[in-house]
Length: 236
Image (cartoon, rainbow, N blue to C red):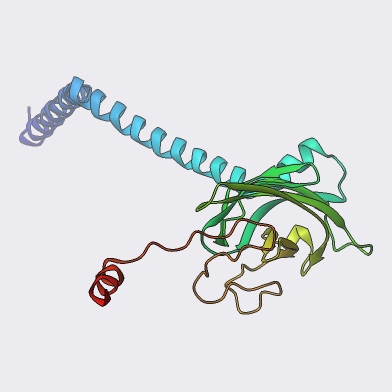
């Protein structure tokens, strides 16, 4: 055998040995990867990804439910596409020492409203025309007031038109104003009473004490303070 043939034979043997070494390494590698720790880590990653996706889906469903709100209820209960259900808020201008315990607007029922301030438009729903109507919409409002300093509860009733500043489908709800003298005023608006462009009656300043009307029980006289009692005794 010549020297060149021997060198070629040695080279072939080296190649075979290297190939066998690579094959052994490749056969051993999967056994190191497929371990209990790797499976546990892969399972944990899959669960985490699935939970993140599930939370995203649930959040989207919740937002969709909130967005539909009263409109969905009105579509389910009243399939007439020309009407829409809007939320109702109470705005009371009475003052302190009185509350509105119960309210009804035609078939709608709500309450309880304190004697001064605006509640959130959370009571659902009053059915109104979807767009601003051409004809007046007049409703019957009944409400009960409770005096907090005297034992007196009275029912009141009034027929009043609804004022439409915007179309009900573009509004933030119906606001019912309870005004001194047991009067009511109703507004469909997009803004609340604190907005400078609110078209209805405004709440300004601090809440006054309720002033009883003729025929109602007077407010009890305030109890004398310790200072006034002391001054009265010294004068004697």
